[in-house]
Picture 1 (cartoon, rainbow, N blue to C red):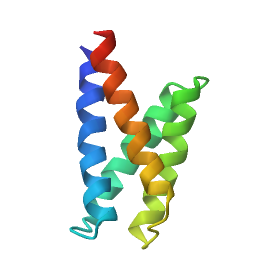
Picture 2 (tube, helix red, strand yellow):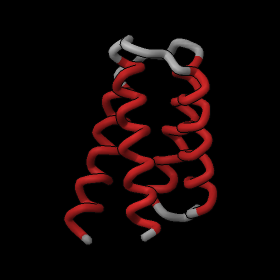
Picture 3 (tube, helix red, strand yellow):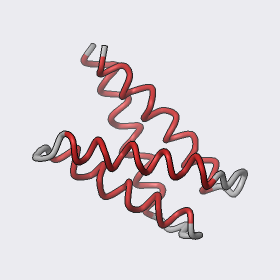
Picture 4 (tube, rainbow, N blue to C red):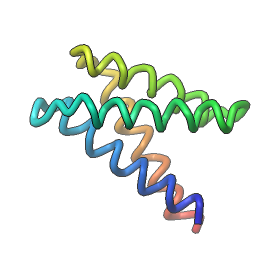
Length: 91
């Protein structure tokens, strides 16, 4: 059950980052929540590689609030899509 909750949250974050990267929306409040979720997941599950990457991308989303639109956004979207895909495959 918790895996599905995190998968749905990752899908929402993926959509928000995609819309922000394409310039269709810059919802700083939503980006703040997305960054907080990824950072808290990274801290809560500390020690695992995927959690460290979540933590790093959470910090990057904070930079997106201030206008950073780098290639890293595509890596973030790929990473989240990868996690979502394997969550569906495993369960």
